[in-house]
Image (tube, rainbow, N blue to C red; front, side, top):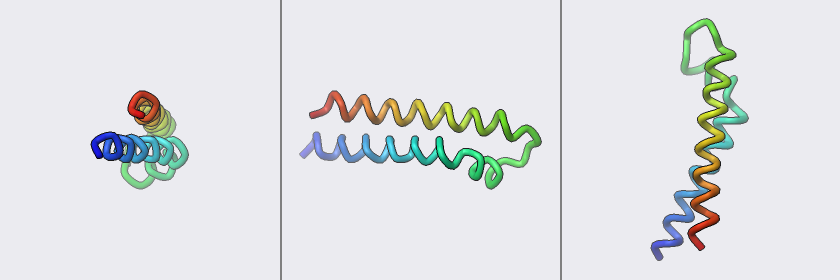
Length: 63
């Protein structure tokens, strides 16, 4: 039962990471109000990439 819960959490992490990568521009416009949107978009994409990688590594090692 424990590996199933961990895998479910890891899949959710991967999905959150993918959403952050693909919707970074929309999320930046919606939640942040400062002028330089390109840097905020790049930051969200980098954070999303790392979250997706962490979720993928968890899925890979917990079988």
